[in-house]
Length: 277
Image 1 (cartoon, one colour):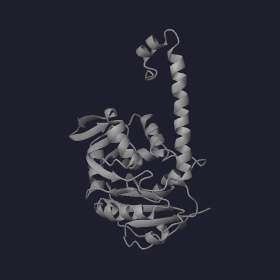
Image 2 (cartoon, rainbow, N blue to C red):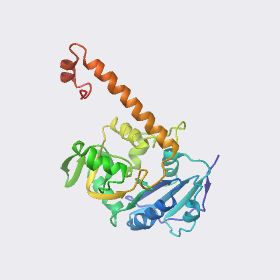
Image 3 (cartoon, rainbow, N blue to C red):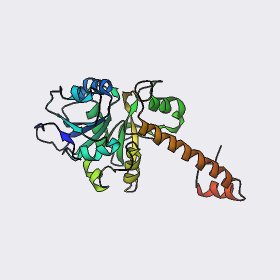
Image 4 (cartoon, rainbow, N blue to C red):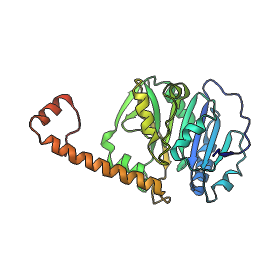
């Protein structure tokens, strides 16, 4: 079924280094309001297009979004919850050469955060996906993992005058280029799932073309995900339940294989996988 769209706005001419921002939201009226007021309204003039895709919300999200009066913002009310698959649909409505994914639960960011991302991205020819770092919030699941569970996975480096954190990069607030996005066929869609890690799939796609992902060390945003801040959808719960069960099975199989003669020695030489603990 075709989504219902608000009347299109008429943004200014798209510049050669303009930015399109896409926010997906579903039943999180209070969080998306904070995202709009504290983050999107702090975007610089470099951002020429903002699409807020309402994934069939049944709370007050639609009513709030319909009050917005900003020439850059286009609201799309989808009759079906497309989940992460809506990124591909939403970015097709834009024309700017730089694309930013922004989670609706990013509720604070420094003024001009979008320009900071783009300017750093332009100086990093090997990076195809550049994410903002996260403020340390113990109640936010992603932040907790970043700062408390796996800080050892990040290494600070400097490239072309830009401080980077080499390590896992997520799509909470991240930029790529339209040119690269089109080269890999856009953001993937998985019609069998509402929630899945499309950012991870995209990073895999661009890596096959020789591009890398990284985190911008000098830009931190406040992410507010997880049960402390919002109700977790059943689709998200199901995804992570399956994810962790699959990981546990793989870990068990890895331990069995690692006990076989010669495997530890060969693995040390060829680095097939990280040795089990």
